[in-house]
Image (cartoon, rainbow, N blue to C red; front, side, top):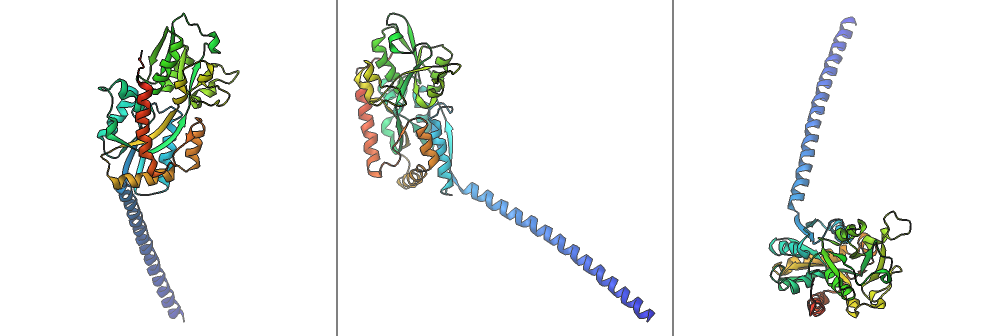
Length: 335
């Protein structure tokens, strides 16, 4: 019995030792398999990410503009609803939007995020701008009124007609510049000061370096609240409607042409983009444009949405803008 017990104990210990070694082997194999599986998953994700085609939406102005968020939110929404393209947001401000336009014209897989200045600048600077015939509409975004703001003057009644004045705009040959020339008709000594964006023009007013700025409600309204340390005053809007308590300029004795100078934000692409890609991108962007975040970004700038315009109307809309802004630019002397 004693011998048998010892043999049994020895046998049990042998089996236990083998089991431990086997268990260790399985653990090692499991670790290797787990690492291999993780490597495969990471490789798959890397290949998937690399397989996505990048499309860059290039904004023509300052990334700090409220309007820049129209396109940031659109990019985010577009990336959530499909896996073929990786949309990214970039900015190339300067030259009244022509730097961005010419970049997009010569760079594959780019979309230009611009506004009415795109149609205006070539009328004044044909040799330092971009070719309107080289582009086509892919999606209108929204249309917003521009506003005249000032930290020095509470109303137009306070503004002298016989003293030097300055008004900041977002570049030479832009919509804001065109608006400023209409305002300056009542103030012969008013000088236009060009910046790279409406945000910079507004900051100049806040610093009291310039008397006025042509900008947008979404950027300026926060500084117009009573009690604000650097309060500004909103003196009038383009368009025909009173918005957020600010009256149109045309009801305050300014040119009737200002009723037609609201600023439409939009996306355009080079005509060199294939029809197949144009259709794919447009379908994605129109769907992405329905997102609550995109519509909310419009609302913050009092920009009326147009991004669900039917396919059969967008090129006519592009052509209408070419014609309309040319008419509004005729006979205007930029100074």
